[in-house]
Image (tube, rainbow, N blue to C red; front, top):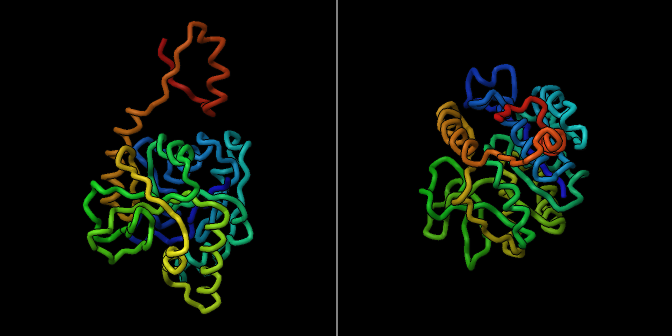
Length: 272
């Protein structure tokens, strides 16, 4: 399985925070960037092949991935050369040569807790999307339409009784990725490149079995502006405290090296 991260946007709504860097390089409460948090949690979940679409400042993203702690991972960086004139449907098109496997697909501005990806990967269904029936429908973000327990539409402007809060993180089989990508290619060939990639997905969803996965027991949210960043920072700090890794050992000096290697930690805080 590979991961695909969309990181081609300008992030204008973040104002001065994205003057000289992509939105995913904005720092969280612990000084870690959104992007590095995603890479770290993908690594923890056992994902080593990552496709990262780029727009402005691709070298910043590459510098993170070149750190020694990620040497067991492999990255490719399909570049959207018209990032300021297109939406991420064109970025998905540019990544098409690398989307030849089962896929974890996510937006580059998503912040989530460390337990989410393992839960998704353990789920027996090969094709899942993330919804929350207990969260109020957002005005400006995606909603998912669920009919007969299957995803049938993703959009911003849908507010019906069968629509739920939705996060753009998917686990998809190779066949479903191909069906989506084939429609994306059609859109691009028609020069329809200023819409969401989900517009193409909606055209084929009726023939696919993408099932809802409730994220109500996890934290995941998008960061679109500075208000989002403040809210997400407060929430994820709480979640990080609740889900921190605690190891016990009678011979901690012997176990320490093995533990640090497993979690790729180079600067641990140790309490004896």
